[in-house]
Image 1 (tube, rainbow, N blue to C red):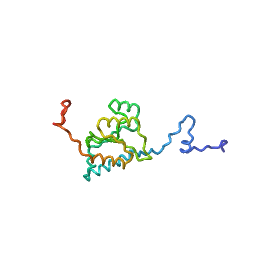
Image 2: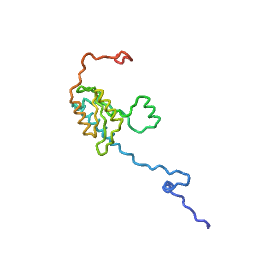
Image 3: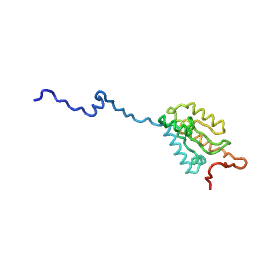
Length: 177
């Protein structure tokens, strides 16, 4: 016969809900926020890749289009290191390295389709203005359909022609030979 009632060991779920004093509660796992912009941008590039395989005019942009991975969450140390390496705030998401319609290329700032879009940051607006002032196409596209239309319009422009011989730089290591 025992004088004191036996205590049951708490279950793991009970301990997680009410940890002993001095023990921190475990972080609540939340489902990650959906990256609508990233998903739509992937869909855009997938569409562009398909157009390239179909041989369409807009598909010609695929081999010369690249993404600038400026966004995302990084530690302050990593962010500082990337800045020292030349990363600049506000650079557009996609660059089309194809001169068309008298323009030197296209900077495309991509946002998700409203209402899931983010607002345009002042650094992004400044970058678009800088690109525009230097002879590049500079466009904000909100959503997949608007971005497709921008790319179709841009690639329908006649190729920019270079007047006179193309100059090559003498500095650097020759990679051609």
